[in-house]
Image 1: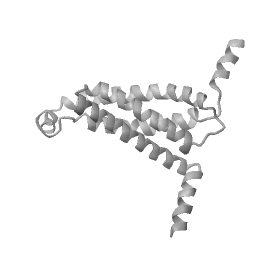
Image 2: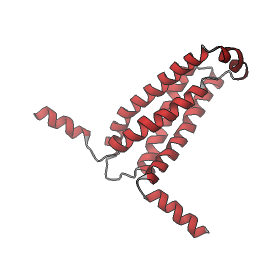
Image 3: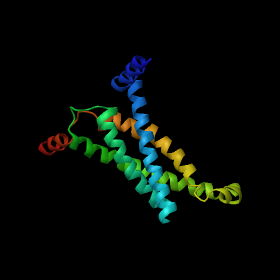
Image 4: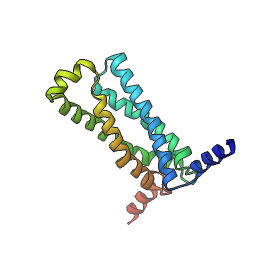
Length: 168
């Protein structure tokens, strides 16, 4: 039984394709836990406005996600860390923008619904967490995973591309 578990863990850790997708989703879940923990701590512990707390939580979650993806998910030792960081920041800016404004848009939209005003706000002072969760899942699946897989962790020196264009 122990050998089967060890073999399965090794297989998931080393294979590409669907297994890489599973690793990316696990990494995203760890980053989401950090993101939500920071956001809720800021909102409830320090009374920070949910929009700013969402922004800061996304930053912390992004750092965790980048480190885990570099070391474990995509395992790209052939790609220089500085290239990954630069490309990750470009993608991350889009991710933070989508998460922050998506959360804001859907929270405000939800806040206008009569049943939310009358019922949900009585039980949940932090009802913004529901739209934040939906937006986080959508952004993770559609934007983050695909941009990291196709752009960030590819062996592409983006600095060389800029140099070539300058020479032309």
